[in-house]
Image 1: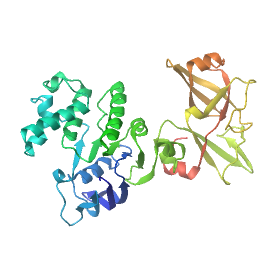
Image 2: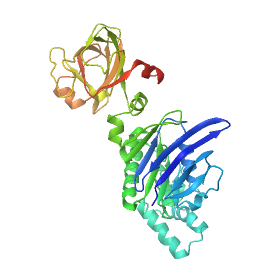
Image 3: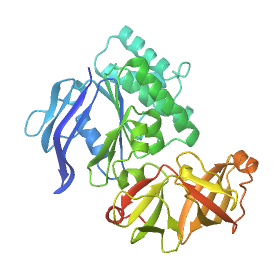
Image 4: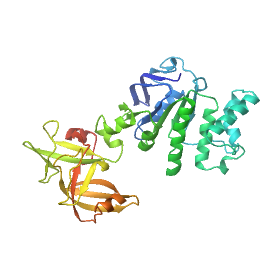
Length: 372
C-alpha cells in the first residue's frame, strides 16, 4: 500500500520558509495532484517525499512506514518503493530505449532474464514496443517522456512521483500523455503524486487536487468538480481558470455595477461592497429586446453592455464586453452564435445575464491582489 502521510512538515532555505506545518494524506491508488503557481513549494514537497531532501520538522510516511523525520534517520530514495519522473526527460543520449529503461534494474543487480522481462513489460506499458533499439535522438519529445515513464515503472513501484512531466510537450502531446498516465494508474493500481501548475492537466487526470498558494499553504483539497464549482476562496477561484470579476457597490439597499448606474438585481450574502466572480461560460449574451430567461440566471438580470472586441477562433468566438467600465470575457460556439443571431460586431450593444456566480468581499479581492 502506498498511502502518503505528511505530518506538520516544514522546510526552509537560508532562513526563508517554503513549507510550514503542512499536513496531508494521499490515499493508496489515487491520482493526487498538487497544483499551484510557480515557486510555491510544490517541487520541494515532492523532493521531500522522494527522499532527495529532508524536512526541518515533521515526518513523512509511505505505506505506514516513517521514511523521513526531522532530526531522525531518513530512508534513502531507492528504499522508498517509488519512481520519479521530472520535467526534464533525463534520458541518457548514448543509450537505446531498452538500455535507458533497464539501467536502474542493472544497477540493482537484477538477473538477466528478470531484467529483460521487466524492461520489456515497462516498454510495452508506455506504447514504445518496436522502438527498443532507438536512441533518444531518434525519438520525439513525447516518446522520450515515455522512456522516462517506463524507466520509473520498470522497478514495479507502488508510488509514482511526477514533477511537471508534460510541460515540455506541445498541446496535442500533452493531451495524449495525460490520458495515458491516467490509464496507467488504473491498470497498475499505483498511487500517483503529480505536481503541476497546469490547471487543465490537473482537472483531467486527478481523483483529488490540492491547491497551494504562493505562500506554500494549501487552500483547498477536493475532487476536480468540487474545486472548480465550489472554490474555497477567491485565490482558488481565480487560479482554476479564466475568471471574470465584476465589482458591485452598495448604496443603501441597492447594488450597482462598477461606478455606473445599472442596478444589479441579485441578493448579496450580507451588507457591504462585493466582487462577483464568474467564468466566461457563465455569461449569457442576448440581443437587446430579445432577452430570454434561462435556468440559473439572476432574474431579471439583464445588464446593458457593449462589445469591445470580437475574435473568431474557429469553433469558438471570444467576446470582450464592457458594462459601465467593467470588462468581462465570454465565449460562444460559432455554430450556436450563427444559429441564434449572436454574431456581434465590435461596438454593438448587447444584453448580459449571469449565472453560477461566486460572491467575494472587496477586502478578499484586495488581499489577493485581484484586478477589478
